[in-house]
Length: 236
View 1 (cartoon, rainbow, N blue to C red):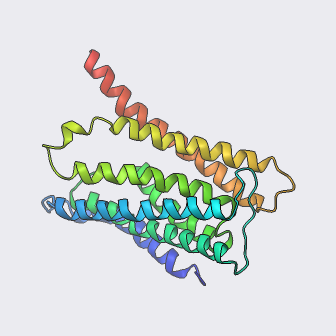
View 2 (view 1 turned 30 degrees about the vertical axis):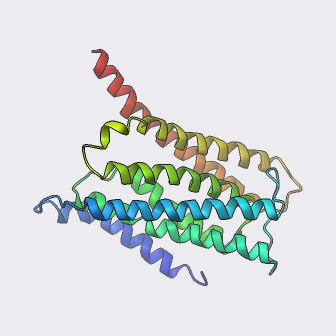
């Protein structure tokens, strides 16, 4: 965390992989890595559950406010506990880049939404941990880890094979849950932006607000293309 060099290096390697990976796989067969995907996603379910628990419990013990919560930069044990889980949350964003590698190895398309979300979360949360490890930022991280428990459970089950997929009818509702979290972040951050005396840096509030808006637009577009298209095909 002392320097952005390592994180920026990972970011540019990720962008390079997204651009060049599919080209390198053109002459190769799609790899069957289902076992690795199940283990990977199961691990992220456990990590996400741990982080969600830490965000929730630490915020309650520290008496965090949902309206305005400045960052505690002291060596108070609860402040350090919150900073610790914020760091794990940032580190999880590095781990999640592996998901793109799985897409490429299986010769699955890497959408703009996928690459945008993974790459920008990496940069956003380096800044978050560096400058505001805790405070107002705990809310969106807690929501996201809760959603990820469900999301990575879905991915792990889906990788088990065709016999399980008929029971995964709830993918559509997972997308709705993802959209709901972004709406909640916009409301939460927007409320904090209206508190002129709040000591949490407003620049971070504006950045989070606009970023959440961008994800709402992209995920809404994904929802319409994926589910409305399927519904129209069934009725035609």
